[in-house]
Amino acid sequence: MASGNAIRGSRVGAGPMGEAERGEAAPRFRISYWCANGHETKPSFAEDGGVEAPEIWDCPRCGFPAGQDRTNPPNPPRTEPYKTHLAYVKERRSDADGAAILDEALAKLRGN
Image (cartoon, rainbow, N blue to C red; front, side, top):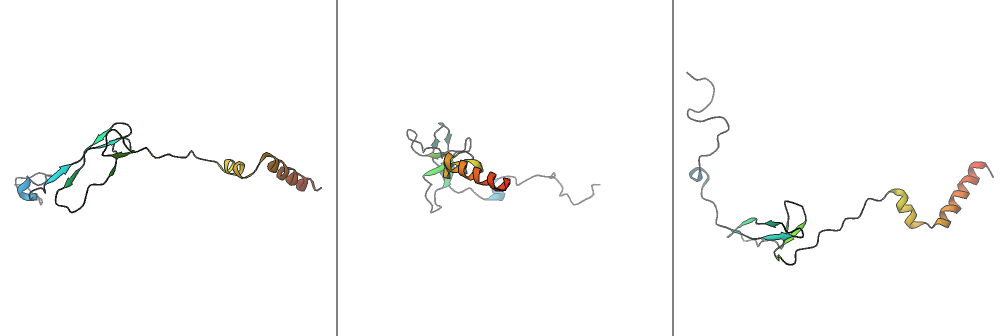
């Protein structure tokens, strides 16, 4: 005799047996999207959802934006490289400014 709370005839982790338990799936349609790398994605959307399919979809393979026009996919986003604090300072100051600030700081340290 089995003990525990298991229902006879099932196993641990067993899910619903089919559509009879879940109900019927809503009618769906698929739209193709292409990214700049040529990957095709076909997400499905409910036909009677009242919402239109988006113009842009993120490619699940590379993450680039994908559009519905295969010959003209959206451009990938341009990412700026990481800048250090020194790079930002060099954008704001010229070499002459930097030399003047350094000379002032050295003079202050030397007590002049």
